[in-house]
Length: 199
Image (cartoon, rainbow, N blue to C red; front, side, top):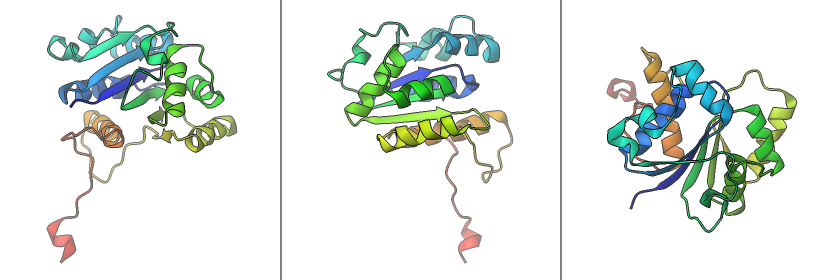
């Protein structure tokens, strides 16, 4: 049975992470529900020259039917209800503004409302901040979300696999996100000791 994953995209830099995450989830036949904030839409334009980030524009026609787009402003949407069963939600990337909204339990838009639902229903919520440096306010917000059951997963790729391209750095983060929500993948993200190093 395919997993139902909510993906939210907000205005922190990191559009390539969001696009690749959507692509991998769709390839793994997940039922993806996508919400993009107004600044998230601008992010796709600024960083990837995608003026209208529809599922077709983000993952292509062959995979677009795996993604359902939802309106950011519709707090009456199914994603705002705990009775709509999901396996997880990922906010990638997560802006400091959205981080603060989630930490405060606000629900003025569909992203923060869906995040509140995942916390209250004890479902997996993964927050992907990319801002740097971090202020004490942002750190306190992260701590509050973590104590409520959310997972903070910064977009911080590792270099121990000796990446040779930006795409490999992106895949490292996306693979970690898939691991956190239990979606299988074949991205190069895990360190495996060489046979010679164990002798």
